[in-house]
Length: 255
Image (cartoon, rainbow, N blue to C red):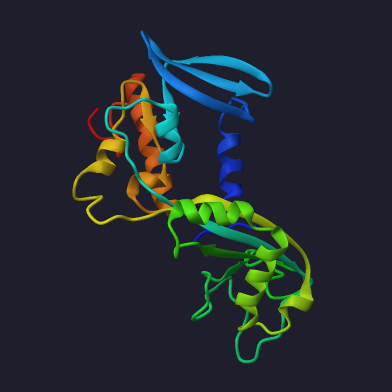
């Protein structure tokens, strides 16, 4: 396992150093339509509506967003589970008998999936201030109902909900909290569906159009970093092949 104090942000920083281009942030893509020589994207840059023309495009977006931006013959209708995510800033971890601090902890019988101690990649792990990122997929109701619950939930109620869940394993945790941040994920992870792989829907959704490739963990039916990385590399190969800059792909399939 390779880890950095900055997490996957270290990978992003390393990739940015290798490109001569400056990313254009804060731009919302509204549509992507084919042209005679490439694609035309309509986007919102602040208050201005702009157009971007490109010979090749990689849609590194969740499937449900791609379905709104690109018109395709048979779009993948994959459902996503909403997640309640809370960052608890603590001045120290509560003492626990017989158990050392772990970077990823799951509590038996709890509602959530436990928490990650975000100092696990530093030399101060287990000592001093830390941030606990707590995850809970809302799976007892339909995704639409669960998203409505998250939208209506007060931040303090979300924090108390998580603290009640974790306090069974860490008595005294509530007294160590010095701050909290609540981040509701409306589409946290793809929901695996029976037959999704068998019927070829994922393969069809990942298949490139001329000059347009797709990259997302959703295309594997599971939300894993490794899957997202694979599809990103595959899409990059497809673009390079289309531009004539690559003749021996390792991951890209036939166009």
